[in-house]
Amino acid sequence: MVNRLNTIMALAVVFLMVLATNRIDQHHFETAQKTVNEVYKDRVMVQGYIYSIAEALHQKELNHVQEQNVAAQKWNTSINERITSFEATKLTRSEAELLGRFKKEFKELEKMEAKAIDHQNPKMHRDQIVQLKGYLKELSKIQITESRNLTKSAQKSLNVSALMANFEIFFLICIGVALQVLVFYKTKKNAKAS
Image 1 (cartoon, one colour):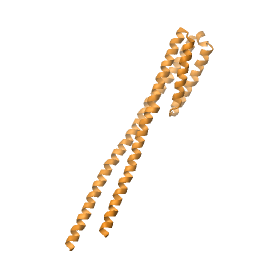
Image 2 (cartoon, rainbow, N blue to C red):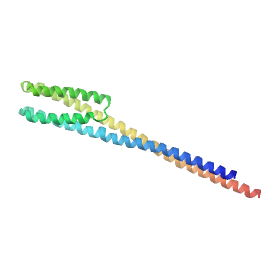
Image 3 (cartoon, helix red, strand yellow):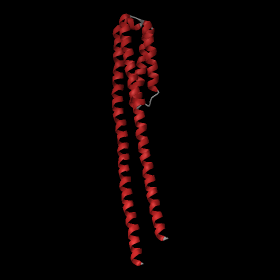
Image 4 (cartoon, rainbow, N blue to C red):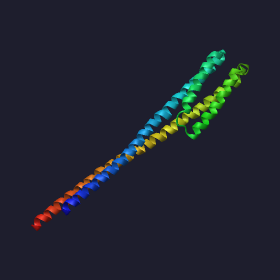
């Protein structure tokens, strides 16, 4: 009876240890999965927004040379939509600050265009667009840095999960060997006692 109780206790301990390490593995896997989704949603998509805004600014620059205000308004709408999409993502502090400055400067550009001041001073218009493009370059650099950091975080979680899985296997082998020793040692001891 004591033998069975010891075996049941040993199996219960093994079960609880495997269950605990499995929960830890699941947590690390979920962290890695969340990070991979974040890389796409908050970094890759944002890089697309930055590209779209840069393209629209370039088109505005070309339109300015040709003095096409109707087309400029179309590009302004496109840029404002991208800014709104960008703001809806998870922003770092530096991203939020740069995007805020970009948005402020872009509003100034829109005001200049609305008053047709830019046609009176084309250099001011060009300088404003160059400054906006500078903000976009900085925002693009942030995307690369943040993507790298998120990828490292996901890799760390995956490495911990792999280590825990190896630990589980090692632990199960040790417990299995210990159980075999206990069972066979007690069986031999009982057989000699008889």
